[in-house]
Length: 500
Image (tube, rainbow, N blue to C red; front, side, top):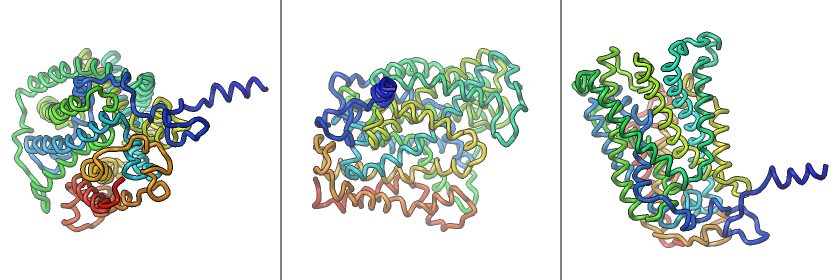
């Protein structure tokens, strides 16, 4: 019995390695090794790793479907693509700033948030990001499962009807889909054990493969569709009472929403960058160019589908599933599956892991947090969300209502208010960033001020039957930017004369 107790104490509940700021005998409430500033010998990301990150990260199924909502509103695909470029340029600015902060001070988002929100108040910012990361992890696994299904159908065409009716309709998923989801989830799991410095090699491999696949898919689309297809020639057809301006602004925000989390997440990655300046320049070019090219590919594939299959199909995996060439179907499915793994790890599991490590450093490190994210991503049964909860998906797409104000607070705090950090004090209770009982009340007030005017518009997006004024909807059409500016301004105004 004594041996079992020793095994439990020493093997099963080992606390994460204490941080440099944890004095002997003190609680690890605020520090562990993964929350510490990254040491120089672990800063192995060069500028081409950071720039390549956007080649790898930007190419995914969800990004290719960005313009679909704009065309559904009646916007011409060419005009929609311009709106996406504008959105990508706008979101590049905060992504570069937060990435620079992470690289310069070698700290991640949970620690950066302490300066703005206070040691306990930072939990608000971490919860805002962590909740949505888990849900998107599961949804992205579901999309990855669709790619695996394309692969299996390429090998065994009969897999399309394998146990076709073995599950009831109430399950909201078929037997092939639940199997391919599980395969993708299992294959993704080992990648969670890669450290962030080691993860750069995964992105370099994806950087080598993605451009080749992009060219191949682009060439197929132009060849099969005999050019750009009629989709590009349709005029703007905006239904009353909406205007082209409204649709254009909505498309800008749709494009921003796909990368809005990286305006917060980027510090988690770039704190491993060797040179802050070169990493920032690489991002400034990589993000808008690569994301816009991915969105262009999505439009061209959809346009070709209109010619080849008689309907506009915005989900590229739906198009791949219709391929008659079995080898082409397999390799296209493989590339989308591989692309989704690195996107999911960097965009969802790592941010979630940083957040739970920031909230519970005594029990979690980055690896444990990533494993928890994967387990929760499976447990939420994301196929149920996709099949039945259309309003919930609308909420996820409108989540920039909360992310914009959060980014505005962080940007104003660094660029306008303090322009730097006392690193030691970010880990010290009752220090400079303790404020009032661990909370800087100004930050939650600014966050609420930025979010509140946007909530009626979000409610209407979730339930279109709710009646709201045109003014509210027009204000909501630039929700991320509105929230960022308002929260940032309020935060700056309230912090005048009280800078630490």
